[in-house]
Length: 125
Image 1 (cartoon, helix red, strand yellow):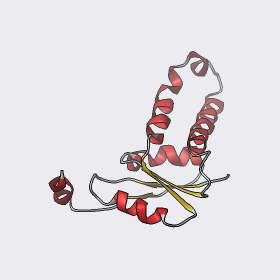
Image 2: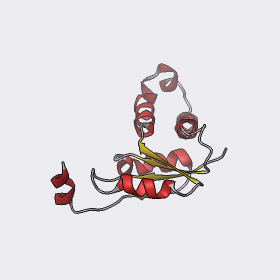
Image 3: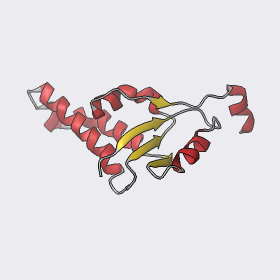
Image 4: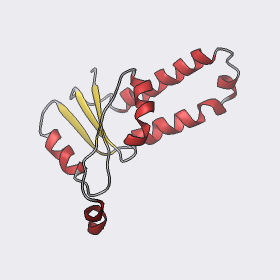
């Protein structure tokens, strides 16, 4: 199934879980608890150039395109068994990695970031 991806980030206790629970009530939407997809994509991106095979590629543009396809493939494979067409992946780190997402997906992305006064977020802990 082809998925449309959206992303949710934000501080702890900012109601991102509540947002996910509300979205999940729509039968077309899949939402996650905090997912590990960002960490997988981030790790692959950061170690890509450590491999001699990638460093030896004389065509840097070709190598960059391979990395972008790999990151896209990670995201799509991560949710390959989900039967709902719209996926909302939640991770606090997404706001810092919008550029990586845009490169991987080949389009502009937006991250939903629930906002709550920081004092309220910290006060619950």
